[in-house]
Length: 393
Image (cartoon, rainbow, N blue to C red; front, side, top):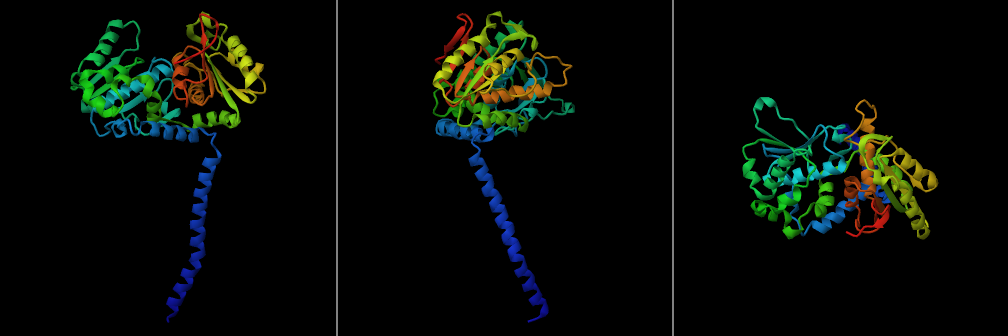
């Protein structure tokens, strides 16, 4: 036996414990990661995974889930565009989900171009549908159609677009365009799915769900999870509240005041002046039957937030960050992007509440639809009565 062979054997044997340590270390890391996930049910990532699992079980045997992937290989696109005034987050979600469904029905690649007030990727990222905006080179001489139904004064134009999506063969009408940019806050999803020209495509999407049940309200929670996952910045802020809500009943308040010193560029809602007091009165009574609760508050008014935190000093929290209306803000402010992060963090957190008190707002109405039981423990500030009333959907 040569000395070279003996040396190789010795070297090989000496590597065995190193390999064992290496493999064991990897396994231990994997196991620890699983344990961390299991031991941290309060994180937004874990809760979203549970939500996805629940939605999958609900829709897997009903919908044709593979059909909800837009054709990313298509050279033709539908792009939700928000580069200027396009409403609050609730308005934008209505426009985004509408554009997404229109892309599915027309077999086009779906993208989102939103940089107002900041790049959308700062707050949410693509989840199962890659909607990342890729700008085409203008030298390719692509044909473009711009549909902007945001201006409220364009009533005739808005009606024409709505009627076309509801009653015409818009696939054929749009066939000559390479790129279709849509800026809208209207619900085009429901009329598009009920359009007789789209019947075959709609049936392919819906599977066993009757077309009569095809509405935005039914599908919004599912579509939101398909499209989005929160950015790290958003997750961190939401987790800061969720960790404190462990083993506690989470009561959430969304107080939408309108024009106020914190939000001076917004529309005035004079009938909402007593919203904060009414919510405090309601929660005081509600807490008599809830021994361990945490109150989360979000508002367009710093005064409203302060009033809640001061009234419940040991059992209330809010997400840190500047208060911002993402469509009406001071463009000179250096904290716009930070405010955008807070808005989306607030939105995600409102979807985790056991009890939810709403003001009239698309923002919190859409957030409510993400809750596990959106019809349970749901209350609303009735402006005519000036008091909190239970909502029954």
